Length: 116
Length: 116
Image (cartoon, rainbow over all chains, first blue to last red; front, side, top):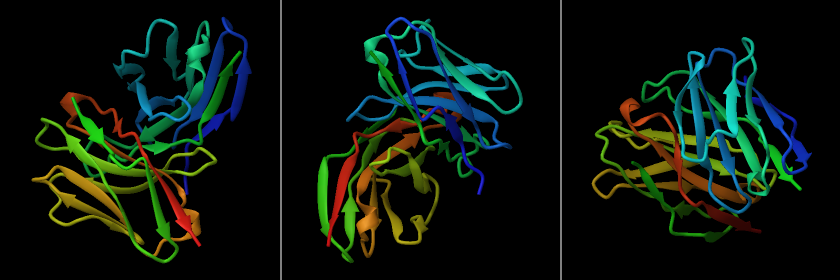
């Protein structure tokens, strides 16, 4: 069964450093997402991406964040200058279409980011 | 904007018994989708079940069923014949129409513990 994959599973970085989180969505899916979950809290939407551009972003997704689909398979989230409060689990998700009934978002296993 | 409320931070159930996890929602969209995800201690988000707002019948997937009461704006997850492996955090989520964006809005989650 196809699945979303994410690398690395765990990333430790120093405050102020740049990190790139990588995702490979399900191959025939068209819509891609990043969510984050701070430890012990609920999952929060960051950004959605379709047709090589951002379609929606939350107030969390400020200028420190960027997303890219550099080739036909990868989808990346870059945090330019990490802060302590960026420590969280970051989930990538993908979906086939927007039509209700076929719009389930499938999540990757997550990348746990720890900022020291 | 969508809002999801899960009022049970923790639930306990005996193995082989059924359990209901509560979820209420609020939206002004005439059509929407409701989802349940399971998050075991390993951290991944596993899709369980989907209910469309116009679906006439309650969704079922194996031991999972969704008790959808549109007038009450509730979408409770019922797990029948609980197993020890069902112990996990469960999140209710929704998305509205495309014009409202395709993000998922999550509830706070319910930690389910299945006792032997």
